[in-house]
Figure 1: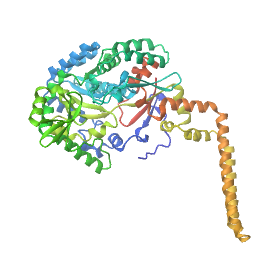
Figure 2 (figure 1 turned 45 degrees about the horizontal axis):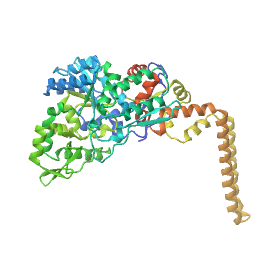
Figure 3 (figure 1 turned 180 degrees about the horizontal axis):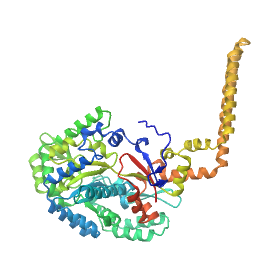
Length: 556
């Protein structure tokens, strides 16, 4: 996807260089669906329930959600129990109690229980949900809460056991909990931290720069991440320590007390096996036919449900029965389990949103750009289960730079994405602009003159001796190579002439694209909390507009 972005904008509505908006379509990793969702919603409207840029779509989503019957007292009690166990802040508990009110609506987001909170985008998701809930309450005069769904039943331990931070030299450094032995795909919620967490905390403290915020930060971390605590429990406690005072409701999806609220969803999935997968596949085919991509490709015999007996195992259809691993169940037996003991089941990626919105009065889900693709496959699935499909709002996306890196980008009008490559091509192009024009013009004139005259010679020399034409061409090619060598030496001279520019480039690149990867997907937000303290949250809250299709470069 090509977007005309020859020169980025480096000013904002509140003054120069406070923040820089970047059109997300300039980024090579943004797929067409996410781009059109923000800039051409009509082309994807049939896959979703409404345009989040349209105020009336919010009013309609609120009306649909309030009209749908939910067991509000029970879910409010589940939330209260979780918050009591984690000693959640008062404002988070007050928000949780609001869920018992039939008028209350929710803006939901979520993520796996990444070590120490996971990458920066986890924080950005939660802040987006909080800001949207505040806006909904203000604009539509309804109680609105922000909920963070911990995907605690995910079984990808490798994805959550590590955290990457910047050290003093802006080098990405990773700390990790030990790998788990065995091959059983156990939910992360079953993992309890042991004494290894103390060594990981000590290593993290050694790696992070010594700032005025580090002591308080690690006091909070050590209260959450302690031997004996569950991995999901620690994540929830840590997230509440960071954002609970702002009213964020944290929900552990593995809580057995909440499973009876969705037992009928599990039972319907088992009663009509394969229907969810079929509906999602049809929508995926439609997306593909329109030039988009389908995120989820499930096997025809699979269900959108896992069985949790001894692990997290997929359920498949087989000759009128169900297979869980190598074990076969009669259809009626598994259906009875889902109804009577729903804690033994867990939704997969296709069913999780329906489970989420059966429990909570969700009017909007805050999604990452990759999530939009699979959510676009679910409209028919929501209808199949009789659950209102919420709006979907792309999370805030941002790169945090210090003032020096921002001044560098501003001064040289360098696009942020030019920093992603880990070679020096962008630096060389920038350095070329620093060569005095008279030198570059003289070089270009000399190169053109040599090419013109030697080309003329190549054309005429056969009149003297045809065998000399090859030698003339070789001479021209050699002269062109020599000129390129000379030009390279000019660039090297420019590098030596302005080593400061080189240092500034490397510094900005290290911050924005550690290891060549987007900062928000690589560096744990704990790294920025250590650097900036509580001002990080205040600044992000102030500087990240609810603005579709923009990536923001922010200074703290």
